[in-house]
Length: 133
Image (spheres, rainbow, N blue to C red):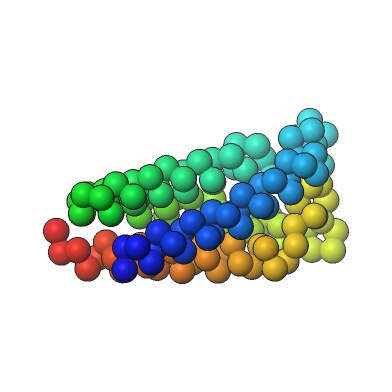
């Protein structure tokens, strides 16, 4: 199950990288000065940074079998997921009045990233809980 978690994590990260690309190429950083975007820079960059760090811990768990690494990965992933949920609610709050670079986000990409995140979160929790360490 650990490998399946890693695969869903990577797929989710790819969808997230696409969303980050759209935000950056749409002027998300430039829009911070004028408060056009609903996404603060700290939020935009801490979400993927934490998720990537947690993925590194997960790979460490896969290589060593360490329950501590699995739980560390899950804990950091939980924080990243919370930040992702904050961005999702801000994006939803924009509705048809979305502003800034995030209005370029395709609904399908957001849905796939969110669904992948939920599946990854559940798989990481189940895998860590079944370790019995």
